[in-house]
Length: 144
Image (cartoon, rainbow, N blue to C red):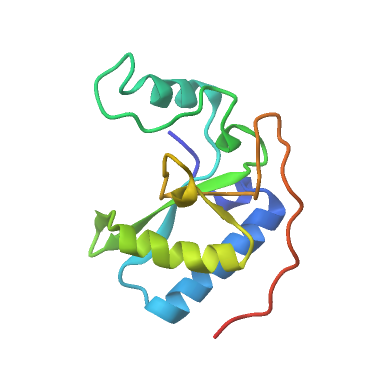
């Protein structure tokens, strides 16, 4: 089971994620509420996810093999989100786009902009396997 613990995130990513979550709620309200569904995931779990849709039944849910995901390092360089309304998970792309607009304001890279979009995924900008990444932009002033 992947960790949902925000304390498993890179410190700067956690700080920016928290600001993005608060700004989302301030702008769009708590319904639906964004929640973090994954921070750290070990290589065994990553392997199971990678096999899905390839060696096991189900849709493909990741393009990263074990060790090649920003979720596989400690501290984690990525988090995934979902949206909850009345205890039910919602996957409406509009919610992800709204959250992404705010997260990108805080310098977080959104997987929804990739050639093969991964809308729930947010990460340290420019992260590549091996842990390389771009420097964080300056933290912007709070938006209202």
